[in-house]
Image (cartoon, rainbow, N blue to C red; front, side, top):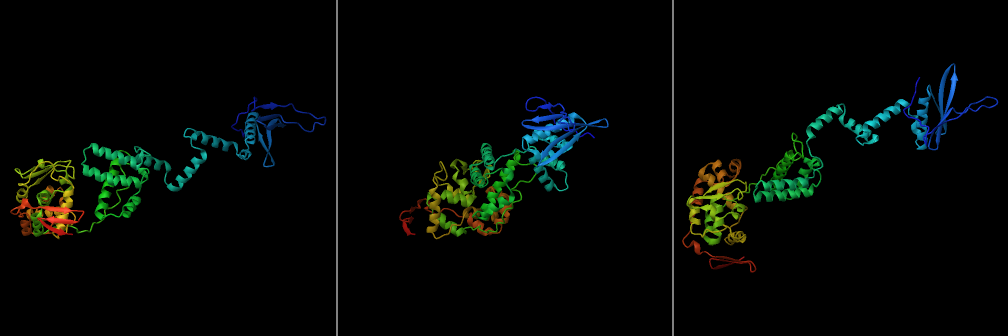
Length: 450
């Protein structure tokens, strides 16, 4: 039986094997080692014996205080094993010598397979064991192949802040409106500050929990979630996420917004406000009330976009919230309100005009609900034209939103009154002054203490 090892013995330097001559005592009782294999200061003797014409070589060494012997049929196998034992004795790893030669062959083969990867054998075994536990009875090779199919193109180690910065730059280069960019920056920079780690590590549970923790209205929360969903779609298009898998934001659901905060002015209230308004406030009040242009859109609007001859207001893509050009019709009563005004430069000259506008309504003891003028226009307009598609086109909204929230809020007769509000005699002579320090309003020469 051949039990040859896998180590080579040398006869030079520290790894030397020295041949010793048999010592013969006068009584010829016992022979010394046939050969000694050395490594450093460790030496392992090899004894040669003959029996019935067969030659055998025996290693003799100590492990854990016990004498150990190993026998071989050929000298080379004995020398390899002796060198291996000597090396282990020298390095203080004597306990390893209990491996059988074929076990050491498997050990060395495993080391050779891992050499290129640079992974230690113990780490590889731990990784395999963990993967085997997770895979159950499934084939690891098949699972690895499927994983590679989905993640082969994915760029690794990319953090959410890096992708946010890249997306904002792309949207700006693509000509997104300033309003839309502002909304993306506000939401995504806040999102990146909360989740600074790798985008592959983000989970739907974490995103949902974060959104729920914010003290924001349902509508605001839904707007933030839409921005986050757009962000993850962008990341997938840039190969930061698998292209055929849902993103972490996809399972997060929008909040059901049960708010019915679509308060509108009555025609009588609107008439009271306009008939007391000074000329500088008429553009804001009249355009919002009778065309539905948003406040943010109105702030970016120039008088050059208001064409009374053609009866249209043209909102360029960079002015509209939806980043698409929109043409808004000018009703007959709106034209009557705008005709006497000096139409040069910006429609809204300063932001202070909005403060004055709400102060005026408070002086008239009329409550100012949020977005009341736009809500009023859409409600009266759909009652007048009876087409959600037409009103959606004019207001820059979706037909489903128009139909769901604004239908049947008012009647056709009320709509006729609304779009029949015209300037009064002496309209351009109205005056309005709000002294903020004294908290005093002067309306058409009459002082109103607040």
